[in-house]
Image (cartoon, rainbow, N blue to C red; front, top):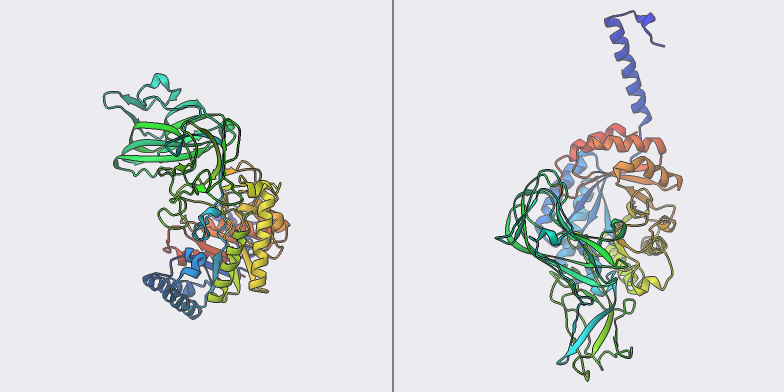
Length: 551
């Protein structure tokens, strides 16, 4: 054992300490050696565009030279292959040859259960929906339009005495009818408590101006226990002139809410707000399918009206079509119910399901509809015919709306049980299409340390036990670095092989923490250079760290 008695004092002691540290470091590095047979890059693209393949050629060449051996390839067109022209498949063949030349295996991503635009391009009505119950409509001149029930609204934004709260850096400019918020690293908000009707659809509209604003302007609606009912982004630019912004929410089971306008912890800059309004709306982004039924009753006698007899076929032509098939905007003018034989003043109670978007347009497909699985199976068959891959990656990820419509509720399952059934069925599809092939999936929706828990966004119920649907051979791709030790242990205890998704456009050195943690549990077979910003600047530096840890 090295000690001061052996080496004396002064510089000899310093040499001894340095030598000991070197021995310990070498020992530690020896303990962290991993197989890492999967060394991938993540690449999202659109293979319908020829120039994108030129970019792929350059990145693939760099990746192969740096020691990567696989590409997790993502393209929203993978869910639309039946609509693709021959040029697309020529580009697929070209990409396959490029990958082969650079020693890279292609692992296509499919089954977009959280970000489901490509699936919904085939049928937008397969989107997950939130319920509206007994909204009041009234007939006039053969048209039934919504009547606010009860009537709600917002006071003028400059009349602070009518609002419940505002932060100290929020000021009213009554002469201009605006509210001014100056960011200084603190919250800058204006809020009001309102009583609304549960299970109704509401629209918020507000004009916003900004100057050099570093932060995220938001409209928030919070219910009991801080439950958030809005997750869509306003899309305010750092500097912009007056622009109208929208938000839509469903009250769900919340009868009293706090409405906020402002920003949380913005660094700098100025915001101006004016002309805020809140109104009950009906039928915006309406869903029509058996599992999300529309019912219209006369209020007076509760008689059920019949479509195509008492009212014309009702659809929202903009639902799932704006700005393109499978995509949903936040708000647009609602469709009108055209009635037949109903007297003016007839009051109707209308129940239906509608889509809400999360962040920048995210919408999930319903996991309880049979047609969803028809589309998933078709996607797998077409993708395998195009790529003939040895492995596929299931894109279950951040499923933020679920288990509200009738198709889900009549199963009497919790959210996690529905997801477990879904991933079990998706796995079976791949096993049939590609017998013996490897199957990967993102970790988050199956990890109790990440997203597999209750009170997750606009999900009814608990995602717990979703992991029970995973086949033991499914390889889990973990990406939540902050709780990596708990997550790695969880999947290792369930005997799943694992792969870690690192980088995320952050310092490459973060990978060391992942690999040090991976060495403690075993079962980690690979690493993915994962970039959401299409940033391959650090491709070689990331590979260098991988090679340090490889056996």
